[in-house]
Image 1 (cartoon, rainbow, N blue to C red):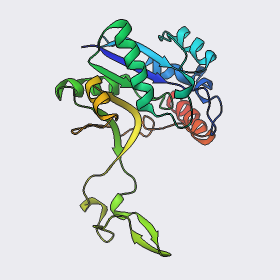
Image 2 (tube, rainbow, N blue to C red; image 1 turned 90 degrees about the vertical axis):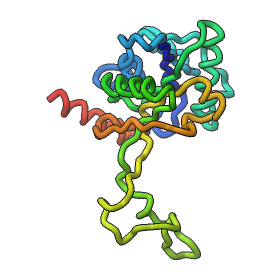
Image 3 (cartoon, one colour; image 1 turned 60 degrees about the vertical axis):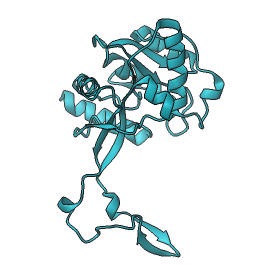
Image 4 (tube, rainbow, N blue to C red; image 1 turned 135 degrees about the horizontal axis):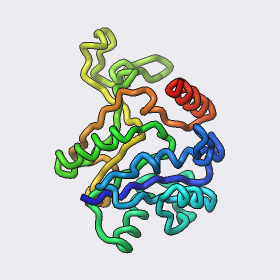
Length: 230
C-alpha cells in the first residue's frame, strides 16, 4: 500500500502569526507532523504544501518533500484543504505514480501519536479504503444546543432531548482536524474528506485532539508538553 502524507502549511495566519514555525519543545510546529509518520512503510512520501520559502526550507531540512511553492490562488483565506490536497495529489501522481491513499496531517495538531497513525492506516485497510477521519466525543451534544429565533431560545434540532440524561443520548462526535485519510478516487469524486461511508478514528486523549489556532492554544500546548515531560 502507498499512502502520500500531506502537510498543508500556509505562511499567512491572522489569529496566530507565524504559527507553523513557532518553536514547540524546541522544534518548529510543522516538524511534529512531519516526524510522526517517519518510519511507516505505507507512507511513500511526506509532502509539504506551502507558499512560504522559510516553511519550505524548514520542512525540507526535517525530511519532507517540498517540490514547489503553492500557487497564490491556493494560499488565500478562501482556499480549502480539499483544493490544496487535490493540487498536491495531482502533481504527485503525475510525477511519481499513483497512490492508494492521501493522509492529511494538519500541522496545528502536533500531538497526534504514531500509534494513532498506525490505527488509522489499519482501519483504512480493514474497511477497503473507505475514508477515515479523526473524531472525539462531543462535549456539547447537538440535541442540547440552542439558537435564537425571533429573539427567543429554541432547540437547533427539531428533535431534541433537553430533558434527557446525557448517557441516554445517542453518541455524537466532533472532528478533531488531526487525521484525514482518503483514497484519491473518493477525494476527487466527492471534493470532500467525507465519503458516503466514513469510518471514525476515535481519539480520547485531550492532548492529541488539541488544535492550535490561537496564542492561548499554543500556550496550552506548551503546558501539556511540559506536564508530559515532568
